[in-house]
Amino acid sequence: MGDRCAPDTTENGPHMGVIGPAAADPIEHSGIINRESDLGVTTRLYRRRWMIVFLFSSYSLINAYQWIQYAIISNIIMKFYKVEAFAVDWLSMVYMLTYIPFIFPVTWLLDIKGLRVTALIANALNCAGTWIKTGSADPSMFALTFFGQFVCSVATVYILGIPSRLASLWFGQQEVSTACSIGVLGNQLGIAIGFLVPPILVPNVDDMDELAHHISIMFYISAGMATAILVLVVIVFQEKPEIPPSQAQAQARNMQPDEYSYTASILSLLRNKPFMLLVVSYGLNVGCFYAISTLLNRMIIEHYPGEEVNAGRIGLTIVIAGMAGSLICGIWLDKTKTYKQTTLAVYILSLTGMLAYTFTLNLGHLWVVFVTAGVLGFFMTGYLPLGFEYAVELTYPESEGTSSGLLNCSAQIFGIIFTIAQGKIMDYWGTLAGNIFLCIFLLIGTVVTGFIKSDLRRQKANQQVEVQTVSVSTTVCVT
Image (cartoon, rainbow, N blue to C red; front, side, top):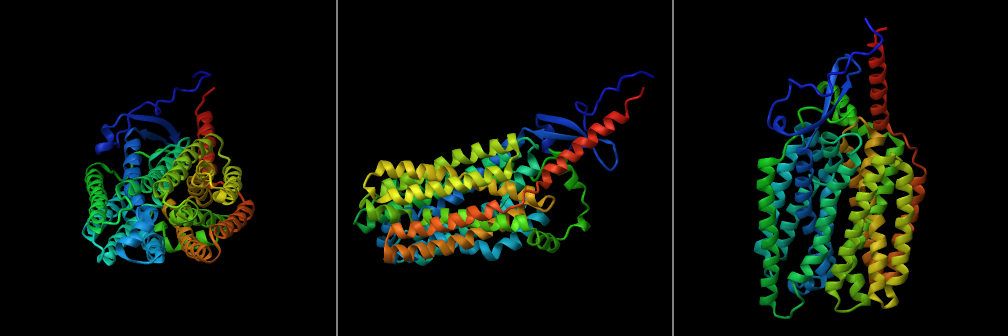
């Protein structure tokens, strides 16, 4: 007997239970102690996790691109299909409307069948929608292009709520928010490309045959990309690592299947007051972003006629700035764990950015619009992963897919309301009044965020296991 602890061999020792493709991956790992059995349990971080999150980002990208590809050239689409502006707006809003009735069955499927099945369905639907649209490059085919857009919108339901779930399944405690941000980045990059590429591929020409040719090229590019990504998902995408990446995830895996009830989980979330306040505030913020994205072409063309390409570039600026904001916010959360403070600060700055954009849009200087739009995008779009991660903290150990699904459902509802209302306000009173309308609701969202009680349950779970690990390590020391 001695006065020193025996060396811990679990950290670098082999784990005999590793099987399957992930076992061959180079890994990073650390040891933990299971709180029920006090036996050594290994958590590991597989390098494959980066491939999984970037592949998810890729198929999220191609789906998000299609959401906005009509809206940013709405005046051209109106002319080609001979439809009203409201009909073109519905090519964007169908994404929001479809989400609402499908979210509950899809999150149930995610909980029952898992991440891989959800990914396969999402990509199959997205690919089918893109190929349907290739047959709609004709002025008489608006109904077909709408149907193709509807199919792609169903795929969105299988995509939007995944980042926080994927991050929790594959990433460690100190990188989970960053991983969630990367997952959201794919969606944002798709929107950015959707703002940039369609005005370039589809110029505003008067010859309908030439216009049909340009629209057809745009559709075939989407279909080719969606097909390639579907093949990659079938070959590469994996459900989860063999060994959990964090203490919280290890505890979640210990839950017996018969202990879980999807209905009970939903009811538990609905009774969670801090989470429900977040649902409202998240919906208000992201709903405003959806309205701005859908109506951006109309806003810019009203004050800067003939600037369709620059309208797309302004949208690109909003989203690229937001991507930077998302990544910075994710890294900041991993470092500080200051969820409420960061969320409230970003919300206040989103409101500030919206006010600046609103009152400078009509000054007649496009460079000013680029600057204010960039500031708005940095904070408003940067808020997206904050909402996901804050929700997971407030609702642990409930399913991340379910909490994210409720957040997104709120965003779609407010997105439809705001898009329709702002569009009508713009028709009657102009862009300034429409943007002031959004500023009012961002102010309400800021106040609601201030009332959220910050109960960080996932963080507490990780800390409890760490404390127990230290306690058990101490008890094995023999004096």
